[in-house]
Image 1 (cartoon, rainbow, N blue to C red):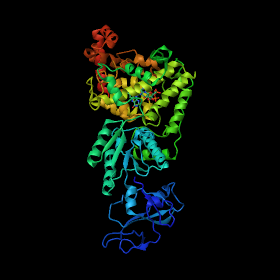
Image 2: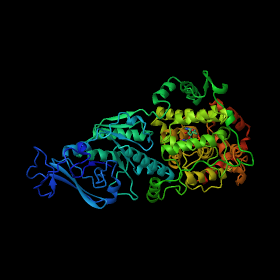
Image 3: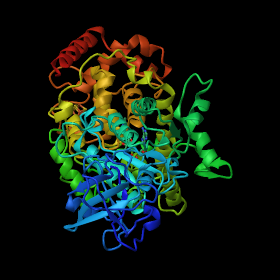
Image 4: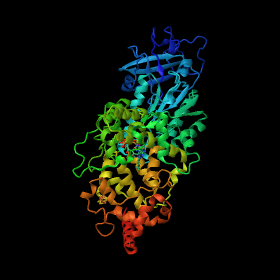
Length: 640
Ligand SMILES: Cc1cc2nc3c(=O)[nH]c(=O)nc-3n(C[C@H](O)[C@H](O)[C@H](O)COP(=O)(O)OP(=O)(O)OC[C@H]3O[C@@H](n4cnc5c(N)ncnc54)[C@H](O)[C@@H]3O)c2cc1C
Ligand code: SF4
């Protein structure tokens, strides 16, 4: 989108200074292309044979009426024209005058501009690229932004929703938040080139972000007003970073990539941390951050005397269940979000998920309200029940803040400070605050470091040589395994599952079944509203699939169905028996677990943290193990 400041023809134009000379003493143009009065341009008469007027005939009444900005003088004094909408007619031609003709509130209006001023008004200084996961007005991309000279650029492109078969809620949450961000910029009188997706595929629409940007730059280049520089904050995905660099190279425009201040740490911090270490571990990264940022510290010591209350964070609910749970705050879609939902339903109808109960935060105000709601109502029990699962209860005591943070609607500093304040004010126990802060200040920063440290080859790792396809039921939830059915149904419905469901149900099953990590990664990237590659990939490929050779996790997160039975109520309603490894009632998790240990025995024997599990394997009778492994093979072969 290319909003252009336009002045209507009248004597006392309030935006005269910006628009240049608007001369009421207009002469009638003699050229064929124009039979309207033209602005007299001292010393610059139209030459014979040269079209003296570039003519815009703009018919989109409703669209235009919507675009009257604050500068409106009652007669439509300033209007942001959307060149794309009107066919991208801007051209650089030797004009004597730029004439604009448009309808506003049903009335035909005309305006004239000095072409130099017109071209200048369209000549962006810098073009600030705002990606869908960078919706932060305070980001470094806007440092030194010159209103009226620089402009922002945003685009909705189908590829971001189709390169993995994205959940409808994931698509909607990104697009709705982007549109709200665009509107906020516009309300601040920042000019935004914004490309909206249409409900149907258009024949010539750009397929990717790179194509959209290139098309924009090429239009500007043809109009003689390319931006001086492209500015972007570090993208959250290696692929996007590469694409932006390629576009900048092709367009011959310098690209300035600015550090992402959203995070507590920089990429360089992680490089320095990793330097010289044989093994990377969260704990050694997390503790110095607590000290450096003074989080949960008292007189230079960790609050309460311990760095980590992980052992207090592993509770399961009693047999009677979690009792009455505080429902998370919902955010009713406003008109902008509803329009986005309609678009997603029309354009991405075949994608998983439904949007009937869509209630995710899509603005910073929503996100802050969601944080407040969590701190007051759920943080207190977060620590104790962090690892617990209860069927039919998707949210439990989790924060649901990852999506808002990942889109940069919410500053993690506010999240961490809020949790610490809740503890210091006596609202929540220390183990709850620490357990939660460890996730945000610790894990979230750590996985980002891992991602950038090892990309792009990280994405190709397959340390356990897994070679099976992802079972179809990951897209349908049609399975008899009750724990999986519950986690998958919830995922496909809401685009959300909490950490232990992702790690110890869907992730565990995929690892035990030997599914190719790349396929698992693509599934996780597609189905969760908070999925952005920098955080999703190390969690999936590293933590849940142990495919990165032990960078993220010191050992594979492998367990039998007995673990799921201990942490949830899923096994009660299941046709399988969690502790049985072979025979018709055997829990597939348990069968596959023993097979997994046996299959990877050689590798796992090198890992001291696996000693106990391998001792248990050694205790199995050879015949029993052979039977289990036969059953595991048959089960895996039966998966489609
Ligand atoms: C296989 C797998 C895939 C995952 N994919 C994603 C993803 O695409 N996006 C994403 O944000 N998280 C991902 N996670 C991490 C974690 O599961 C989610 O952050 C969490 O479930 C989001 O729900 P919540 O906001 O209610 O989190 P809470 O349980 O309330 O946790 C609080 C916050 O801590 C942070 N956090 C917690 N665990 C992690 C972690 N392991 N890594 C990074 N941050 C963490 C999140 O920002 C989260 O909002 C994944 C985990 C696994 C095992
Ligand atoms: S018995 Fe096995 S498959 Fe069934 S719910 Fe329990 S762990 Fe899942």
